[in-house]
Image (cartoon, rainbow, N blue to C red):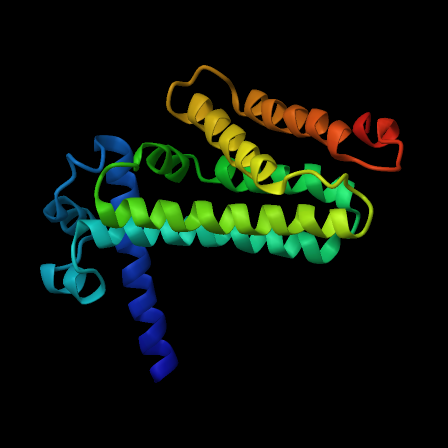
Length: 208
């Protein structure tokens, strides 16, 4: 009984999030009132407020779920791949795959800064987590002799910046295609890896 009830509740919550995502994408966050989310979902006002405090709470949930998916996929990839050189390149592809699968969320995420202090904090927490696991992987490579002993944080910040820039040009300004977004980020990190790598020929791997 409890399992069936929880499943039904999760279905309603998911429906509300999906409707909000569609409306935020169609009309923009600012121009989407809670009433329209409720009407599109087909549920009552009480159902909405059972799961969310307000529209901002919905957006925070969407962004948090999106960021959790990115972190989960990167951590899962780390479990499968131990080569530091391959990790350095391919984790960026893993991250971009999540953006590419979630075009609406990528667009909303790229425009979300400045909506509110709470949303900005949500964005900052993801950036901090991203910088943490990126720098941790590089530091691990330095300790194991794969990477040169260079300052780590500037590299981590450059990684975050190029991903945000490429996603923005793909999904917001539409200056580049999805494929060009991947090429921009991967080629940048291939060039970066040439300067970072220590004691191993990378030519064959980069040409694969």
